[in-house]
Image (cartoon, rainbow, N blue to C red; front, side, top):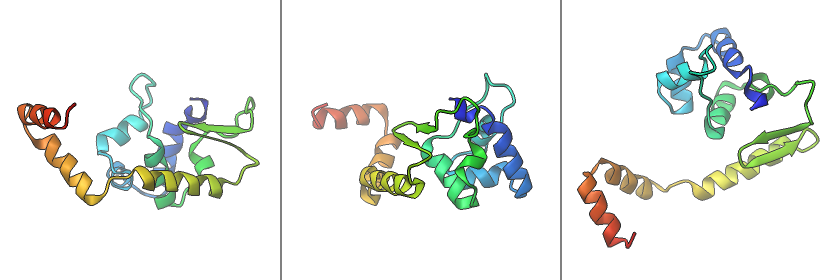
Length: 138
């Protein structure tokens, strides 16, 4: 993940410049504070990275350009940004790619009713989940 090599430093710098706490970033991205701490971890063995949605939430809600948090100026750059499920070159219109991504996210996003069913399914006992899956033929 070449484009994330300095993400942890860039995130911390952006967060501190904007006078945001890790808790603020966690709230923006819909994760917990410990997750943000792993994004900023100095030790690469303890470091984690945000998923595309979390990264886009961070950029959109803090009005931070994507290239400020990603290593897009690498000398070995092929001119193509590669994110899981996306690939576009610098010549491509980023707004078009983001609109397509938003449409795809809306297509797979759960309705309120589906989210409530999933929440209840996850909270039930293992035995109840097993019976529900049997009823569904899984």
